[in-house]
Length: 358
Image 1: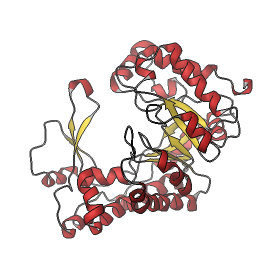
Image 2 (image 1 turned 30 degrees about the vertical axis):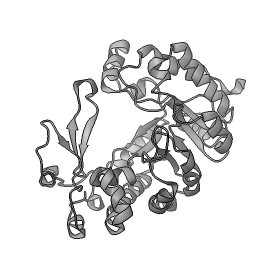
Image 3 (image 1 turned 90 degrees about the horizontal axis):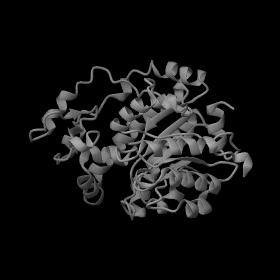
């Protein structure tokens, strides 16, 4: 099997030849990787990860400086404004890859102000690079992925602020509807472009869970976000019924799992062991959805021994069984505290696991 064939077979629970490797390194661990391996190639290639991401649509003549007028205070030196107008103030030296977000639509008080906001013009964006990138990825036997992990809820509150958007949903639904629908429509433009280019997987997501509870009521999720996520998935499946849908949410999301299955999510990420039991979740939903994650980045990866890392990988892959259904991986970005030996232990455990021995 190619990497692509193996991954898709695993996701569909049709068996697999090897346990795929996947992780994201923070900037300091990227430097550690280069130092330890002496390699200049991307670590995704070095460790033979099964997918590569396609670049998003490229906006035409999009000047982010116009968004500075939406901030009534001075932004910290070194602040970057993204294509949506969200300002990212630099973090501390200890967490240089983290930023403090400022919300350009937070202080807007009328529908006129909201409708005048200059959303990024993805309708007229350039997609010419996407098919060539897909073809190049496929030529290597890899999976082509479109990464859209801030799909509806997160992108909306990044713009409006979480507190204000929550209040809008309760006290001013017209304003909430405008922002959330605008983000949904843009998400459909981006998602359908990836699929038309030949993407195999779309990675959607919004953090809707916290460490010990859900972030909003189930009723609020079903009212505001479930139908809009279904609208996006239906749009891409109208183009390619075989497209595989990943969905990411950190934290405790158990009550939302039936809703995610209902709208067509194929793979749930990351199943944080600090918040959810993979054994319980797999027993309840393993015949309806596949999983991606399960190796704790708050616990096992930074504080376990290499032997404990390997044991956790073997335990979870054994739970999933020989048909597959689990991309066993760290649940989030690997932070500076993670020993390099634990990264290698994870890779070695995936390489050593043989499903035909189950």
